[in-house]
Length: 86
Picture 1 (cartoon, rainbow, N blue to C red):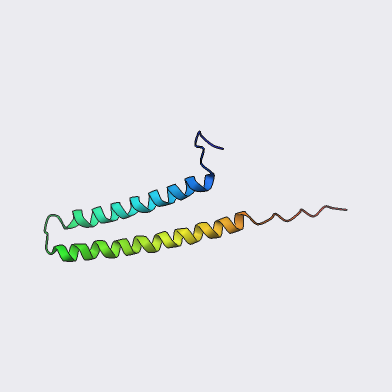
Picture 2 (cartoon, rainbow, N blue to C red):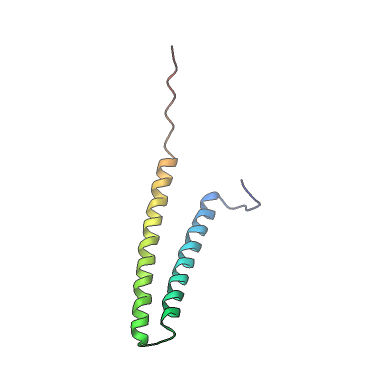
């Protein structure tokens, strides 16, 4: 086990996954808000942009979750025995 963390490795990966997803969502929402600060037009339109950004982040989270499941399935596959020469 690496480091002094007593949690299983899958918990650390899950924490990293959610941390990255929240980080990406916060950065995207912040950029959208900061781009529109010099000339605010409509706060409803700004909320709409943030909503669609969060939808995109949600889709990315689902894709990353499915990729993690797929990686877990292939990692648990039993290795094939090597052919031994006669």
